[in-house]
Length: 294
Image (tube, rainbow, N blue to C red; front, side):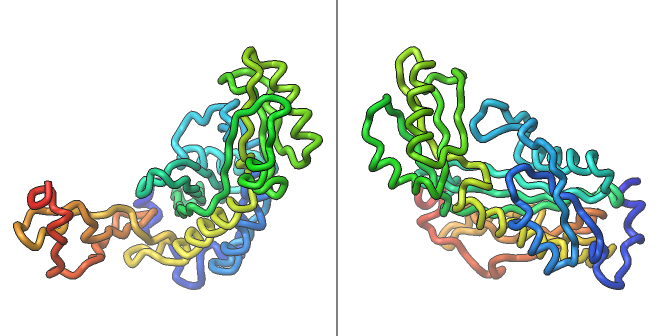
């Protein structure tokens, strides 16, 4: 069915997902992070689909992620839907790297998506937070690790060890003890032509405690978005779909690259609404103007 065929099919009596079941595709124990908000806010019950989501990419790069984070999350959700026969699927995907606003700060962007094959809609939300703990170092067997392990919050945060040379096996994950860490360093160093190994935070959700609340925050945003209904057709998932940029400079009137409005939209129909984020009379500081302050 197309989106337009669903426009008049959304009941206004209660939430359309209340009491229904969705499957969460995960092998890294994300259910307690994602399910509570969806159950509390929209009444959606979430069960685990125990599928191998690593086939769509890993943080260590031994299996490349072929698509964007959103594409990967949708593909993950569909893995669980295919395995269980459910029409509602949920998945999350994380991207950890420099914060676009503060490039010297590492941040975690978590995205959580709901795929509804019955209604032919996809609704997603994300959350960005620099609170994730990450650390990496390069060592040889016998090097001191005391400072690095404190920085990495080990063993609360588990580690991976691999040869420094890109693409050289093995990769040892989920390391949670000094005994296992030292054994992995010796093993990986023996496989490296230069004897160097890389030790880094294991970023998988079930062994990275500071990533977990960021996933939960993204899931809460998704639940709140699903709770909002389209003013036109009543579909769940009303929220921001675009941003309008351009605020006049107070000196010369040149448009400065600042948000002036957000566009809210529906996942099921073409309804859109512009929502100003600054007053119509607001003017930008000339220090931010490319003409007045080139």
